[in-house]
Image 1 (cartoon, rainbow, N blue to C red):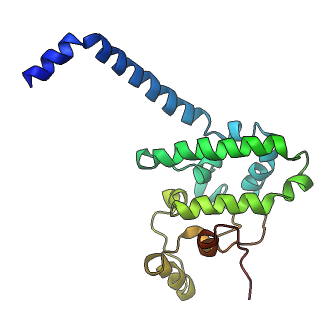
Image 2 (image 1 turned 30 degrees about the vertical axis):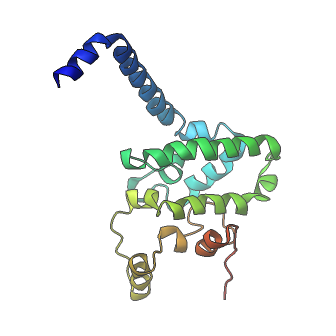
Image 3 (image 1 turned 90 degrees about the horizontal axis):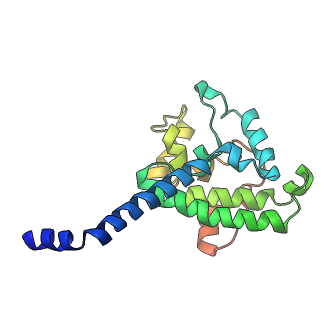
Length: 194
């Protein structure tokens, strides 16, 4: 232990520089994540105003006094999910920025041409995250009725997660996708309604 203390004492300049750099970097990452996790930031791109308006008209908005923002559903929260939040900002942010410049979203009709693809991408994130953002608010769901309770039992027995059954709750309805098959096949698979 003494040897370590002597070593640090002899090299305190680099250690101090490293510590200060780490604090500055952590502040930038955490502060940056907070700054770009706001609905104001999301809707700074015109095309995201359409889903933001749909959210405010949905049953999820105002329910029990909750007014969720974009990040409540689309960005995992907490230290345990920080890596997911950063990856979402980096990967999805880069993807959405690229598509912003490649596609014409100038009106809602043009936006709707890509809506199923965007919905599927968001659903796949939720599937991969085991719907962690849903569970932030819906911690212990106790659905009424036997069919709903039976469906919820699949979460424990068949690896299902919230988004497998609860698609089209907030934004304009589009075809549902089979998320398990989509994962297995590596492409979007639209659910066949029987």
